[in-house]
Length: 333
Image 1 (tube, one colour):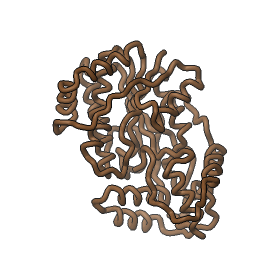
Image 2 (cartoon, helix red, strand yellow):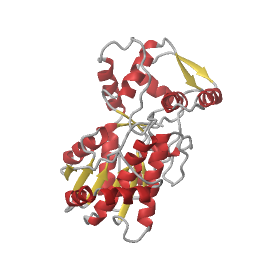
Image 3 (cartoon, rainbow, N blue to C red):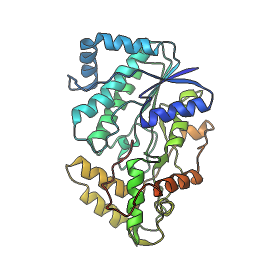
Image 4 (cartoon, one colour):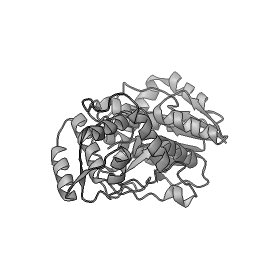
């Protein structure tokens, strides 16, 4: 089996390549088309217009994918706070649709598209259905990408035989902005507010676990159409304790959610993204993920790996300096 990764130089794409090679797989990066200027109000018309205007680029994309059995699309704009609707639509909806068509033309059997749990917003629990409740322009662009691939899969001859949408939640790793922001916030506060008892599941994932899950989705025998990254066992309280919090101020969970949602009813994507980050950290959100576990997948990294990541982050400069605005990683809602 040969696997190509689009967006192989990015945070998730490079980790997928590394995870696949560690398992002895024939996996490598492939050139990725970059779409920033689009014409058309929907994915179908925008894709058709781009291919008509850039036939050479589309042909080169097809040629670059020939001979591969699986394509993992990790390309896109991981920018939950972005305001540029056109750029998000181009990168997260039009690009995947064109890449899937190129994969089909190249004879690829399976196309794994990395989407985001952001497409379900505040649905609780997050699940592996086609239900969508996007809260931001970023999330809406991810929904458009999922729907474009689903529609292509339903049209005979419009895509690879197997279309898989993979949804990671908030992805953490050493040196990532959200990781450092949380470490600094915990270091600065003498006591941390928390919703209720703090036993609510938190939809976060280590990059190593996300990469391993994507590789499993690329190689498993019969993948589901939608795969959600499994829960890592962290709750609001245990997450904050990992980052060094020792004292908590319990607040009724309903008040935490109501207050943050009220504050989150703003039209500025950047502010809304920060508040949503706090909402997830303080109040959590359930995760109902079955597809990977049913096929025998087990998360390779556990609590020790989280602890090592936090330890690395605590060594990165002065954590008690002014806390920066939390800038989410890929998949943060």
